[in-house]
Length: 415
Ligand SMILES: Nc1ncnc2c1ncn2[C@@H]1O[C@H](COP(=O)(O)OP(=O)(O)OP(=O)(O)O)[C@@H](O)[C@H]1O
Ligand SMILES: [Mg+2]
Image 1: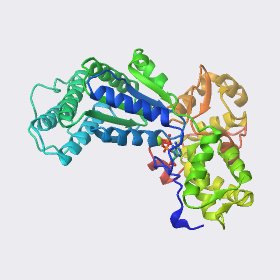
Image 2: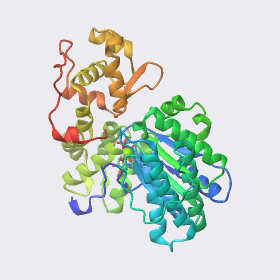
Image 3: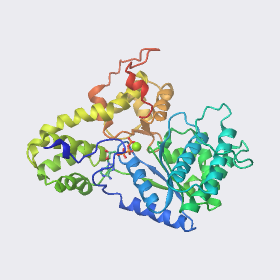
């Protein structure tokens, strides 16, 4: 069919043609913006979920909701592995204030908040390596004590106050939060705790991989009460069907039931897989009625696309020793596995594998669903690994040599 009209969106954070199955979350965000905007209490949100399930898309939607309700938004900012919280907070504040000063006449409150941000950057960035373009004099005595927790609270309160003068408040969006270290997460929790006690109109919406709630809890036990947690799940079968069929219907195309069933079985309701299926089958189908034959032809192409665009970058993030560990995990089958079982399967002691395990968790490739169980953060990763890296109990890592020389793998920071 015509490639120009292809409605599907298999890309990171790409707005889907129909956002299915997220009404409850969007309603929760709406209520929080409205409550906090009118001076009532509302908690900040933390979303968690597997790769490709739709977390970034939800943050982007929440950003739209916030702006529709007069909130000043930072837009979504992604955390990277070595990011320190003060820099991220400065970045979020700068983006929100810049948007505020671009869209409206710059008021005294905005100038003051920019001045406070400048003072904050002086206090936090002794090396002078941060690059923020702020052409306002630093305000002395606010957010410049050098104590990150107190200074972040003061900075956010200033940004909130400036935003409230022009609308409802300031909304901050942080993606890939699992890349923050324990210190940064503890600082973030303490800062949001401080802000909520002041009832300042500042709402944080954060997202990350499934280990994020536990990471926050380990950083500060009270985060359980501080944040509203939402796990973003794959779509139930009926919603997954809607995600595929409605965009097609709008363009006069349809799926035969058998074709639809095959796609739903294959994609297991994971939004990224559904979009990939949609995109590929749209390209391949010859008539507007998509048949089982089209689905069978598309299957191999979808697998290729997913291998190249979804799985491979993540696999290449692992060192050779970590890849062997993952191959052993995948060899045991799909679903969570106890770390003791993986060690036995490899014929090694658990403690000799702890570095690999920790490395994979840090890179966001595996996580602990419960206790000592381990699972992949990437859906359908086990079958992929069995294809590209069959487990060989005799395989040993080659000491000191990187497993891959692909520049793409080395350049990509996020998995
Ligand atoms: N509710 C939804 N309905 C249909 N498609 C969706 C939905 N949510 C997300 N998608 C699609 O799924 C894909 C993945 O979305 P997104 O990038 O937001 O996932 P993610 O959870 O942030 O993944 P990652 O952890 O890899 O960053 C995109 O192609 C997007 O268009
Ligand atoms: Mg994302």
